[in-house]
Image (cartoon, rainbow, N blue to C red; front, side):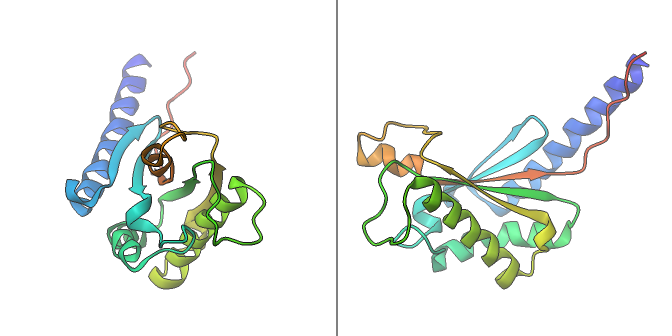
Length: 169
């Protein structure tokens, strides 16, 4: 039984590693994207500056180009599920109206990106789930503009189907 569990665990790690390699081929280090494996998913972190326009809400032309490699992977692998996690800093942009807080802002960003993937890249809506994280998961201090810039990010959590680990008796 333990041999079966170890084999399934190796297969899971291989699946995640292979997906990371496929993403890395589409996102060279010069793109500003970061790719990591965490738990049962591959994380693709896209920088705010390349993804959204000046108002921080709509996906920019450069952002559409940045999404192209991901869209190609998702179109060819409908079994992949993706959570679109949008994070913000603690300051709402001045040009954004009808938003009461950073949760509204982050959710609007996640929804815009998700709709764009569906509408412009023909990704199956069942593969995507938008999630607004707001300002509550900072990776840097919001006291500086550089820190706020780092906190505004989008993480695409990509879940491949993984083999189940058998229960031990």
